[in-house]
Image (cartoon, rainbow, N blue to C red; front, side, top):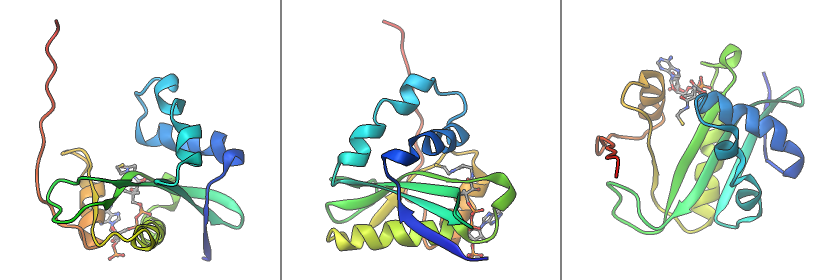
Length: 146
Ligand SMILES: CC(C)(COP(=O)(O)OP(=O)(O)OC[C@H]1O[C@@H](n2cnc3c(N)ncnc32)[C@H](O)[C@@H]1OP(=O)(O)O)[C@@H](O)C(=O)NCCC(=O)NCCS
């Protein structure tokens, strides 16, 4: 299986949107697409697609952030979104995407990479750990109606 990694472009927006929907199925469409153009134009962001026989099968969204929980340096690379279509999981595609994101952040001068996921996303947690990420913090979100 030969996976090709390349940067996403404006032409990939529909496919990228589908993959975002795969990560955040309950998010409204307006929320999922409001920042896509900005991300593609920003030098601080990169979206990489994984292609199998020319077909997009996964993606990683990565950003340069000033701060990352548990990090000792600044700026740092951050994994903002990570997705592989279910039928192709467990074959190293996310790992290859992560390498591309890490290489990109390294090229931007970063020496640390950070990420997050939901407490109950065991697969994502295990994949992070397998790829060399270690847990530094757990977070609980709150809301109060005003
Ligand atoms: C998380 C996700 C991107 C991983 O994609 P993937 O292509 O299956 O991952 P890989 O095959 O590259 O695996 C990466 C590492 O994680 C491990 N891993 C992956 N799936 C695993 C599972 N179900 N159980 C245990 N370990 C797992 C692999 O063993 C691999 O380590 P190795 O290279 O040392 O063997 C994929 O499951 C996904 O898209 N999930 C839904 C979206 C999501 O939750 N995204 C993350 C939050 S933003």
